[in-house]
Length: 171
Image (tube, one colour):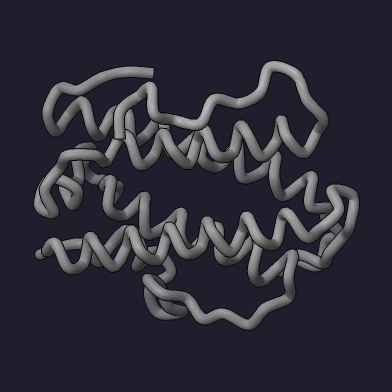
């Protein structure tokens, strides 16, 4: 994916179009930051002692998408894919020895989670409320804003990791 292939958020539009546009922009940015790298490069932990890697970010964001949209908004029962109660940071920690198959699995899980999140979002009113895992009432609007923040923060990490790996920089 090239920088100019990313979804451009609308400059005018209602709340839904603006929020989903920015979220899709950030989703595309994550994919762009990972494009063209090998499994070994995607697993590089570029900022010791942090366990952050681009592959870990993809796995983490697959879990975050599933958690907020499927579990919280839609009330679906989903089990974690990359972490466990014993290893809460397994999405980041367990990337050693990554192969193309593990990369493909992570991206497939992330893309499936994004696709399901889009379906849930399209079928839900922005002001509809749900109970979070912490017991708080939240709206879909809040979830969308939170997800934009989540991706924006992690895309900053991805930018630094990518630059460390091969010198590639960009927005």
